Length: 346
Image (tube, rainbow, N blue to C red; front, side, top):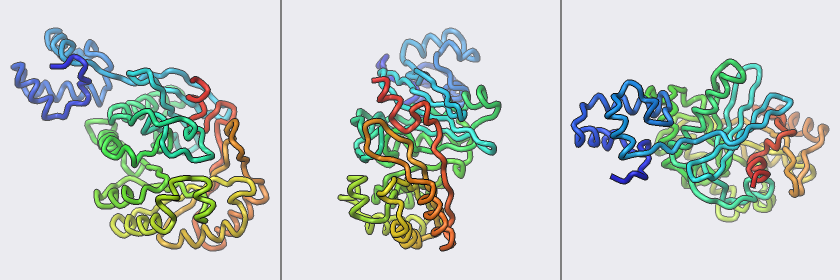
């Protein structure tokens, strides 16, 4: 057995086989799983319902590559941003966003990102690797503990809007969400989870075929092909027409209402003509739109839209009976735009 093997990457069948090969009863596999996921033991010594002999056996064969908090910064508005250290000393980011009604955790799916969206701090970092499902689960578990510690209540919502493109780490994404929503893990409702994508059409169709129960958000930011290609290079290979077809397919199969994320950039995508193009695009399925204030990133040439233009944009969409919310930028004083904290620590 390879001592470098992370026990959490074993399937339940492999864990049962290990127990069988070492003359341990089947219920020990269940106990070990509970320690690993429900209680998130980060060392075998914590598994006190197991004998010392069993714990030593596990230590001999396995290790636990747990995620750890590397640094935390708290904003004046209550937002807390974490850099989280992985077993290989690479860093990812997680954010706790409190409000009156909810505590939201924003989590990462990759170390860095390959998509290089021009307005995104993570886009300035190269993609180093995918997170495995246990590392994604760890982020959520840690942020849930931190929510209780800092705000006196657990997470109400999880958004995959941190570093990376979740649909380019598809298998680990779905495995982590299975654990987060399973009674063997955190027992959270999938309706409280939102996965955000730049619009990988092929994988949006796969989500539909896999009959997912969580929410889907599309980082759209403009419904104009030329502008979107300027902002997001992915639009060259997956133009808006292809994305539109995938979204229709997704809704027809799942009946899950899609959310569009739209950052308002000053004098780029905040005119009434931009709002009109967005309205036409959004008519393809029931949806809602989250308009987002831009959180300025150092050395990137973007500014948030003016209050007047933002109000006009919202009013136009509301008059067309489209559900629209304005998401105020949070954590400005702690580099809370995705990728900023890790960039700063490099």
